[in-house]
Image 1: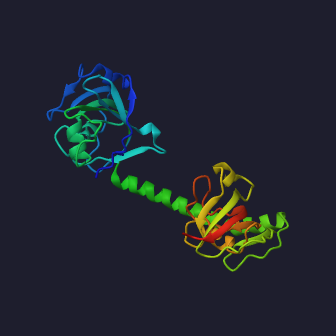
Image 2: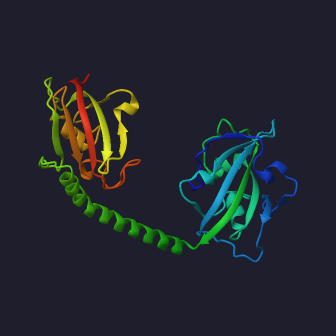
Image 3: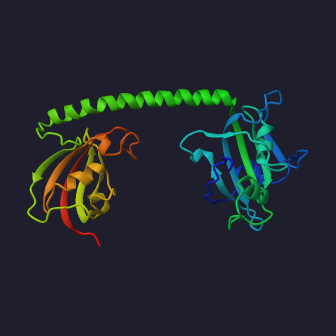
Length: 303
C-alpha cells in the first residue's frame, strides 16, 4: 500500500480551501484527464522523478454531491512531523502521483481526482468507505516544500538515526549516576535487589501477602526522579487492578508488589530496565528511572 497516510477522519466544514469552493471553474485538464489548478508555480523549477522523496503540506477532502459541502479526510498539519511520501508510479491515469510529478519545490496546487479510483486503486480498499458516495470527487490541496533524491533522503535518515542512538547511549550511561544521586540525596539506605529494584517498606501490611497469579488492587503515584508526577490512581478515581506476575504491568511492579501484604505501603525505585526501557512511554522519557509510592489494597485468587 502506498504511503499517503490513509487515516480517514471526516470533519464537516462549510467550505474546503478556496480552490474547492470554486469547483471545476479555472481548472485545466492534463492529457490523462487530471483536473488541476496551480496557485503558485515555478515553470522553470525541477520536477521530481519516480523514487524521489517529497515533503509536502497535504489536505484532501470529499465533496458531498447533494449538499455541496466538503469533509476534510486528511490534513498534514495534524501530523507530529513533516508529511513525506516517495513519488511512485501512477496507479491509474490522472492519479495523485501524476499531480505530484507536475510540481516543483515551492509550488502549490489543487487536484480533483475520482474518489472511486483513489480508494479502490491507490488505497486498494476492498470497497468505498461508507461515507464516500460513488462517483464523487476528492479535492487535493498540495504545497510541495522539498524534493530529495532517494539516496540523499536515506543518508539523512541514517544520520538522524545515528544521532538518536548516540543520545540514547548517553542517556543509558547517565542513568545509574542519576539513581545513585537520588538515593544519596534522599538518604535512602535500602540496597538494590538482584534485579536492580530498590524496595522500601513505608508501612508493613498485616493482611494477606500478594502472590503471583493473584488479582491485586493497588493505589499508587508514579514520579520521575525529579519529582514530576506522570500518573496516579487518584487521577483515575479508583485503585488499579491487575493479575500479579502475568506481565500486565512493568517488571518492577510485578516484583515489588509480591513483597507486600494487604494494608502495606511501599516506595519503589524502578530502573528503566524494569520499567519502560529505551522507548519510554508518553511523558516518560527513554531510560527513565521511576519512583512509585504504592499501597496494596487487596489481593486474592484471580477468577
